[in-house]
Image (tube, rainbow, N blue to C red; front, side):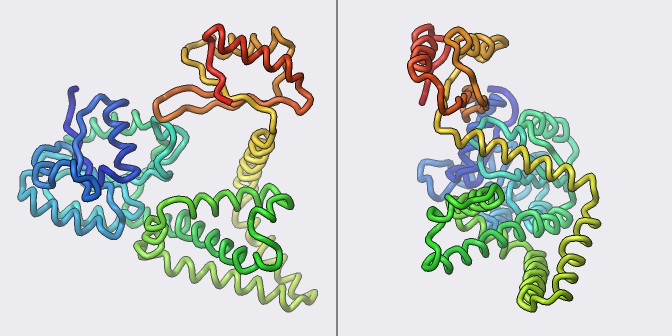
Length: 368
């Protein structure tokens, strides 16, 4: 392996493990790491001594303290090296890293560790703080990550995250609390899903996602962002005002609702933004409808080359099986998977012949 040696602080965490795999598999780099949860990991003095690029992948609440400890351990040896962090808050970690003599960039991938080899289709916020000789290497890293990168100052990042993360998470956690409180009357979430709208299904999925992942992350996003409190108070003011108008129930209250929550918000967003957002909503709705189909096959194509999909589709054509949908994805190892949906009246015998052909010819492997 050639290139800089990568050191990861927090290597046993979910993102630490994803980063190790990314640096090794996608960039061909050697990676070492330290994590208190992994007794076999490299100790801190060795990590800070050997690593050319040091990545802090630790809980938000511990990052600044960790950075201070590594500055003390490095004792000036970090000069000429690159320090990065990937926490969801940027001002405090970046300020802490700037106390070192290393070049400093704050990164924030706007996703949990994906089940994919890169961040393609996701956003990465980049906060350049002190960057000189490592600029070309960082550009190569970001290009290999395949993320949609957006530049920001640390303060701008934190102010935006108070809206993009703290407010969004808080509103869904509040919805979860209401659903929990109402469950004795109307049933738990599973009992509500048969009545779902597309919007409710999307919100329920986000709630499930938040409650399924590391709770410390969501706690720190609220308590670690200096702008979260004022944002949540503003959100509460809006909800309280809406509840007051609905509770009042008069024609005047309805007029105020239309003016404040519908017309003024529509004008503030603008026609272009609304049209784009509505189109995104419709696309998600179509996807949910496709994935809801009970008749489907998941197929892995071992040969990821031009023409592989055409050959796969020819098998369905040969057996006169029509497709209603097809979606592709990649595993963290880079394998290509296709989920192929069919109408409910698909001929089961013809479908069985398709499965046999795909597996027997080695064209692909039917997984489900």
